[in-house]
Amino acid sequence: MDPDEILLDAEERMGKAADVYQHQLTGIRTGRASAGLVESVRVDLYGSPTPLKQCATISTPEPQQIAIRPYDASQINAVVKAIQASDLGLAPNSDGRMVRLNVPPLSTERRKQLVSRVNSLAEEAKISIRNVRRDANKSADGLEKEIGEDEVKRVKDEVQELTKKYESKVADAAKAKEEEVMED
Image 1 (cartoon, rainbow, N blue to C red):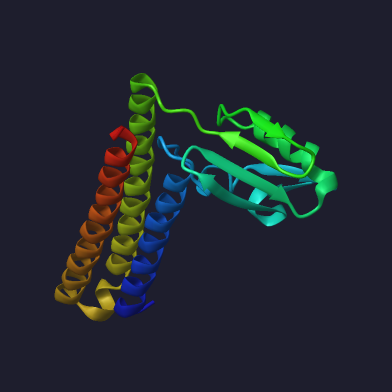
Image 2: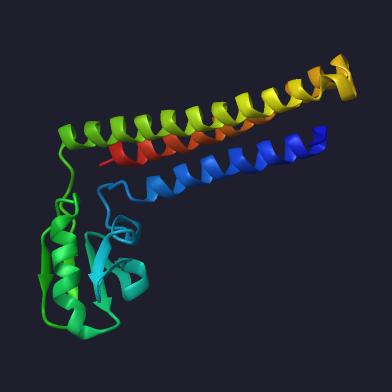
């Protein structure tokens, strides 16, 4: 692996860690209804767990309501069971064709719990980014005989810059989500 490959690999893996964190944030509830809350709920369809977004249309007709319309109306009970089994704490209402979820306002205590969850997920993402840094630095150290000490130092400095960039991206996303959760 040459120095450019090390840097490209590190940037790609750090970017993926930041993207995973962003995706995790969509599942964290705020005071408003959001399709992201239920998209990843797994529904048991024909014996295999399937993400809800692949088997139903999800919309937010009102700020405090999520509407779920399964593509196959016979699967409505499976959707209801999946929502009840999830840790969302939302009670599904079914009319035979569609499932409605009313999203109640969050209590202050619950908001604080969600903020701590946002922060713990952010820390996990930062740890992933630092692990990529460690791997990249180890790869650069392995090239020292081929490319020289100065080039290894340059690669490590660039890896550190990437680490700072992606850690700040995660921190900014965490701060924005924290503000969104805490607003009334």
